[in-house]
Length: 204
Image (cartoon, rainbow, N blue to C red; front, side, top):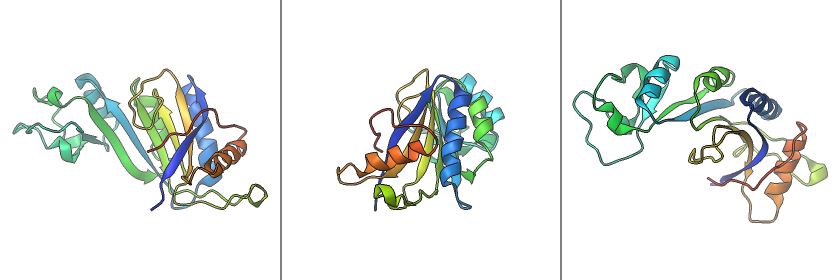
């Protein structure tokens, strides 16, 4: 199975500007079957309560193992729908930070709202199942399996580990064997929307 590598092609402290550039890249590769997923870090109970209301169709998950859920709290290690999350339970804060996510949604259904309400903590919007066309003049072949676009909000890495004051657009291509093909493909993709690769690639 092939894996992807992601290249930053735009970064700015202006969230709306970053979202606009991401939409341009998505439009270049979008297919009828493309989808989008969102994910964010939720470090405080106040944010959990706020996002539970702002994103009622989302799911909350705890990625820190080793705890036995109290009787009045669903098993957050298996993901819990926002509507079933007992935000007033006194034991909920023991699971912080949580992750809030919505996966495999129709393109255009959640992105703008999510970006507007997610708050100041690391988050991402990722568009999947797209297609990058051939560029025979550059020796590039069309790519489907690893054709993705990611918008990082308030962070600098795909793992949502490095908080930042900027928002970054990543374009994903198939990882090769170090022959420079990925670099050339990412640069060509960025050029299609008037951008360029601005930093080193990020691996899964």
